[in-house]
Image (tube, rainbow, N blue to C red; front, side, top):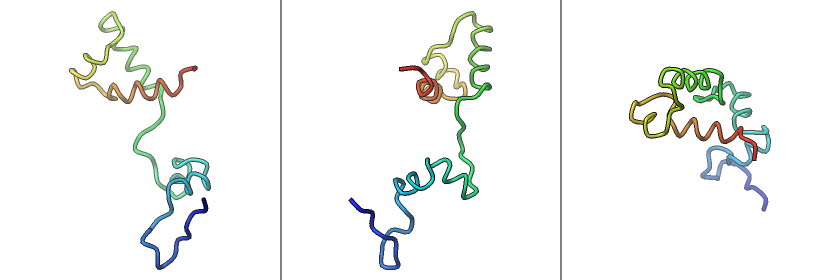
Amino acid sequence: MRPRPLHAGSKRRYPPGSAVIRGGGSLRSALTELGYQAAWTPVSDQQTSTLRAYTREHGRAPNVTTWRREHRTPGASVIIRRQAAGAPR
């Protein structure tokens, strides 16, 4: 399937995400080239140090329920998603 061209008669005001990713390698890198900075960042040392500090303070690793009840940041779903992305399969 060929992408439709962007022209004056098109209702689309921007290229589809798949075209951006194909041209820039990833949406993040394409946006970086345009001068935008993502609001989130990949797993960082700060995130893992936050988890380690909780473990030192409470003597056990946090569970999702506790993390959410205490309104800790980053959110539990963010931690799970980022850690799972880097986990071996």
